[in-house]
Length: 441
Image 1 (tube, rainbow, N blue to C red):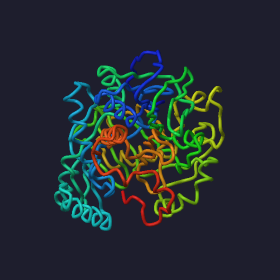
Image 2 (image 1 turned 120 degrees about the vertical axis):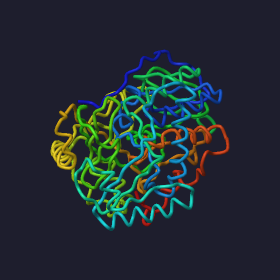
Image 3 (image 1 turned 90 degrees about the vertical axis):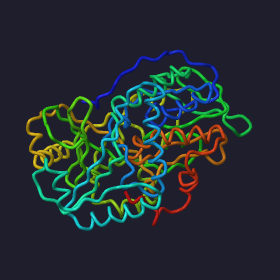
């Protein structure tokens, strides 16, 4: 079954002009459109399917600073503030709360890595609490196991993937912006070398600013514009169980399995980093650039199947602006979860937390995590095409930093002082090798 999602109704009318058009209604695109609208710009958010229906509703819901790569930590910290501020500003419910995130381990090398991160985080004003063996056992008493150590990041938290992007979309409309669902962007028109319009299946919107927040579809869309954006998608599978377990942490990570409490009292279960590589022509094309990433993380990856080819999001093909596109043929990426991984997740979860035996399985799903060669997002105006801003390749980190990323996009689009330094995210970096630059976490 697909991941849980709050469905919203939006108008079907398409404006003929806008100050900015955001392509893609996931958490990144929604927050970008929200902050642009708040600044008084006439903003249109267009989504080929339903708001939040792809990876933005298929993730764990973690909003963390803990173990972030140094390049992502500033935007992670600011995002936590923005999650809170959004609820205060709009009254919309995203499920965000700073419940703290618990990490437990019996691997001394892993614990040492967390301690090194703690020391680095101190230098930028971020506090995390290393746990002794006794403290880890107390925090993790629901496991009934002893632990060599752990981490508790008290200021981190979670939000609800089923609610978040739809809540932001509602806030856009309330602020005077436009949200249009079931409307795919087919391409970009230019005049004098810069963006002049976004062409959709329902018509053309004149604009000088187009923001591509297309998730796993971003690279194939860029290819239509002659832009080379190296991107590869990993199929990740997740399991959900009903309410009924008591005394469990709100959010717990171990090497074997991780759990997150949902708003209905049930839990989402997953194995961190584990995924299937569904080979596509696009992946083969960019394979040399992803070699450093593969060398670093190959233990967590396994060969997939033909899901990627069936979905069409990584095609090397081209299309005309007056013909049906792959995005219209596949409105929502809904790949099949990997059955063996789902069985393994459930078995590990029951072994780690016996209280979960009181629950029943309520669903399982998969999603495509869009990754870059270095595991850091691409955010910035594309060199050579003024007015075209890319915000994609969030590498499994996009949900938690969604508010900060959206704010940064709005800063770039309006020429405002950036929320955080923007240079580390600029897409120009992909012209160089990723060796030695892979995100640590």
